[in-house]
Image (cartoon, rainbow over all chains, first blue to last red; front, side, top):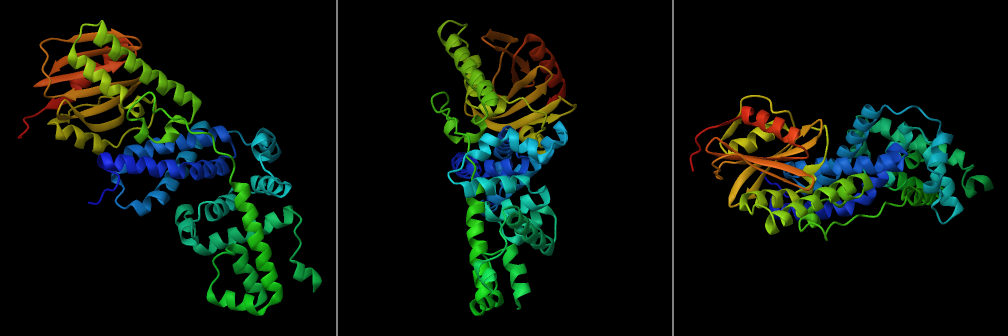
Length: 176
Length: 237
């Protein structure tokens, strides 16, 4: 069995991999949870779990989607454990306003707030596609959906963002 | 492909268009403009998604193994403080044993080993894979005959020239470390108590087991449970 992360060399390779992926894994967890502290807990637990199981990875190329899966599961597990109360998006925005406000431009800040307000069904595939670079097939596998369903959600997510940001159409549309 | 179909496809994944969509975009000025707008929006989405990431907490000054431990393990202040305390505690115990303690080399090596595996000292309710636990014990010629509690960590570690099972048993008082030392012989229980650590090395099977925790009660109970659970069998070498 090929085990790229087994042994001492594997440890080092895996640590480097985790170090490189940690920023995006944190961001992914943040957009799943919409809570910075929860995201830190999720990534921390996910990486600990991954660290323990790293020797089971047979192909280095599968490590990234594998870590993504662990983060998703850890997030779900945390929600099962904590059973967070349902909160209003406005409250979430208020709680995370310093986080959301860290943007150089108004355009990015507005987009961040709009993504924050998207429903989970639309936000998660969008984050997986744009931030994590997942293909439609990979997103479908992760979410247990058909590729068609993923494409529909992605389309509607962008449509919702355009609507929330007041984008009515392209310049060419408006000209015509 | 017509304009409606193009906008459906582009709206779902504007950066990965098929040949027919690209052909339509080349021939339709309005759809081409729509695509440019979508790509610009995606660039903004990406920038918006890239929220600031908490700084990594390096532990290189504390543990020589820290460089191969996922940095995120140290990213959460609560966990970091707990780990740092564990590591420093381990180092302190080692130093004390070395300089003023009973100078037992085995106890010192046990504590040194624990200090170098801080990821094993995490309190959790997540069990290790039971098949893996059995496999690791099996390599040392040990099988489980009863439940020893929630084992959250199981590794086969190199210790004094032998591969030994390194387990962490979670108790209500926190994690307790167990090393199964088939090749380390002690004549009688050897207890040590320094800093936040309480430990014992006791004769078991052909060798011994080392149990280290945070309190006498923890260690005593875990030692009894582990001793009852482990069954040594002849190992052909």
